[in-house]
Length: 100
Image 1 (tube, rainbow, N blue to C red):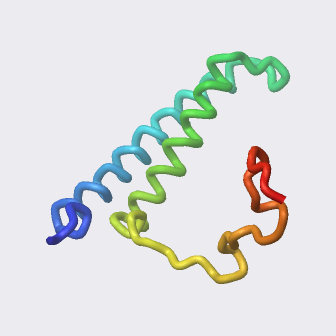
Image 2 (tube, helix red, strand yellow):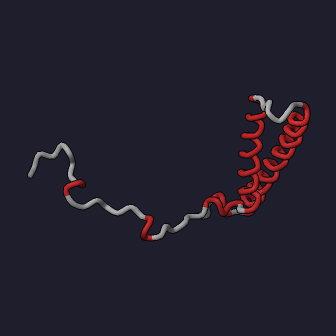
Image 3 (spheres, helix red, strand yellow):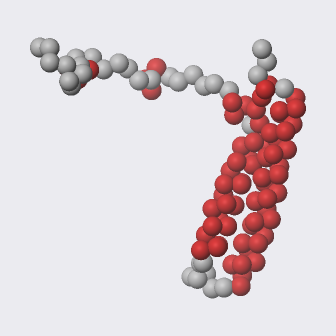
């Protein structure tokens, strides 16, 4: 069965969503620039900080969706040295187990 993110519509939709997020980020950047020009550099306000955080999220997510698209859903094989190994020895026993 074909997964939903492997189709052409999903590819175009994800990339269009990335473009929309980048456009939103651009408009936020323009608004933030105008706000920053109106005050001194040391007087950053809470709305400016919130707009900066939203701008960062829109730019990051938009770039990922635009350039990678459905590839974000691909599985990645983890190298052997980064995999979890089962704990062996007395540490692996249940602390409530009373057996010697």
